[in-house]
Length: 277
View 1 (cartoon, helix red, strand yellow):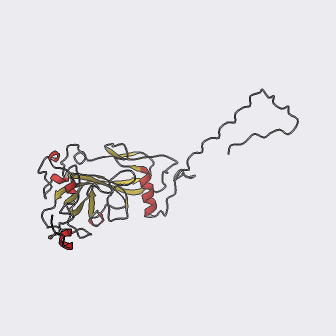
View 2: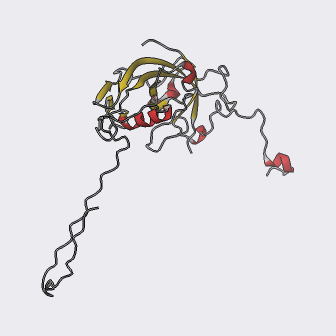
View 3: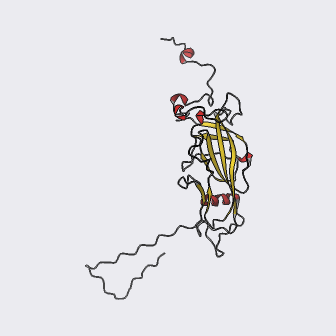
């Protein structure tokens, strides 16, 4: 299996959801002839799906007293990230009246876009990961755009992606992270501390990110295209076509900066005293 490159984060900020059946007569109706064609019963109507957030007499869904978890569940239902929305160049908040509300009380949602700059670890410097290993890449994370929404899903809403952050010709050392949070903007202590490149995926095939916050309703990671060619300061030093990605070659299965090579080695002959042929 390909190796997973683990990242450590240095955080820097910049400004910036019964039909009725006919009754049979019991009184002397003539029976139908054997050659008659009986009428096919009409199919029962397909029941409509039960709306998760139906509107009441007031025309809205009462969300008074919702917990943070209930708010996050609703936000996941109404917000579509770019990859979910067929790789669109915008984030969408959809409105399906009677299905997801609208809500009686608007929910505050933070949509934040983060620029990630990756660099290969330089020597043995830098902090250790939680498992005691030294990371193969570092990344610097900076917020480039934040949009605060007060939404009840009464109308459709669109948020354009930062063009440079999602440009097709962006640096191979750069990635993008989209976070959708209920309530206030994310703080540095809530951002991910360790991230995998080419690592775990969720059921929809999107890369997983471990935020240090319970307020995250959704997120989406756009990985760097070739972090293996990046210098410690996040500048490309070679053509990605000339440098294979970690794990793509048999000798790369255990990068030395992730799994340090032992200082001494041995073979079975040394242990069992077997003479060399």
